[in-house]
Image (cartoon, rainbow, N blue to C red; front, side, top):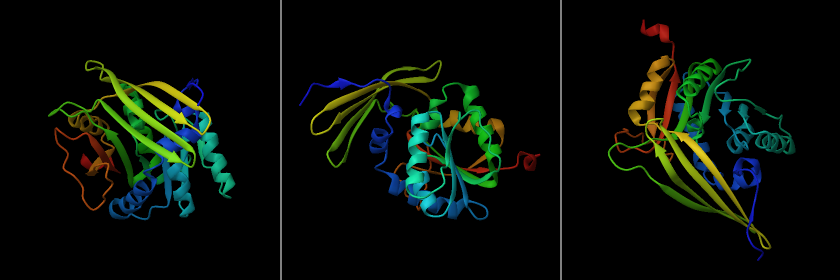
Length: 268
């Protein structure tokens, strides 16, 4: 096999690789979302939104189930990949380029979801608050926002590294995500993601630095209370077992929050 070639850019610039690295849980996530919509939303859920949709791995499957879906992402390669997949299957393209902290929909949706930590890419407090405000404008009252993220536990050290492998045919990708440093004052967690990509004749590597905002459970709940637009109705872990919500505490790291769009005037 030839020596490893370092590819330019990051994983988000290679949608087919991104799809393989993050696509293995789509069935569990899909069935979880369907159950959550039925159990917790007020009224029928038909219109859906995914901020930071990436390649649209969930949007596409939901569209196949006759939901009216919309998604957006900052990365134009991911958006193009998503829309091309929709078009190949006779579906109307559903994704557009936009910023999580500054977007607008012409019509509100019934529910939204953001399952794999993309929310933490908003590294400034103002960006996070703006995102929740934009989402509140995009989701109707009584609708849901299902938001998954890694919290920073306070009762034990946070996880420093995780590795996983994914294979499709002759393509194998080994991924390692590890902490470089944590800045507790600025609440920024610096990671490196390394993907080793194997084909029958070549080996590539992607090395991508990443920065995430850190949230303890208390800090995340404080953020929710600031705007008064979202009510926490349930929390789950990354097993996606909708029948068994968890009670998060100081040792919780993997959390999926089910948030309901509320009317702040009702508390006055």
